[in-house]
Length: 117
Image (cartoon, rainbow, N blue to C red; front, side):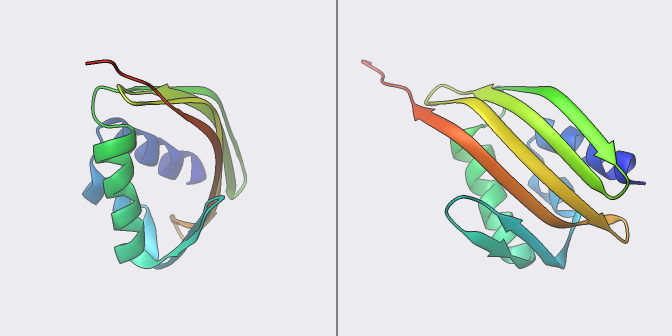
């Protein structure tokens, strides 16, 4: 089941479909980032709205370099690039429970890109 949740999550993110992404979480889910602990569907929706519209919108490069699922834990290493941001390295860990993402951690290096237009 963990493999299926991970696949659904990645497919929904690739489409930048926030409502579909949210189907992987519950009101009790938590996302832990270097800057915040994000709890509940409203806060998770807000986070994904920012990511999918500003940081890594549709059309941005998003490449999963490694994916591991072991029992109820999933792990990703990825990199991404959009018109305004570059993420040369990032890692996510997912803890799955009852067919959903219970806890999701993310660590990343993000660089702003300078434009002269």
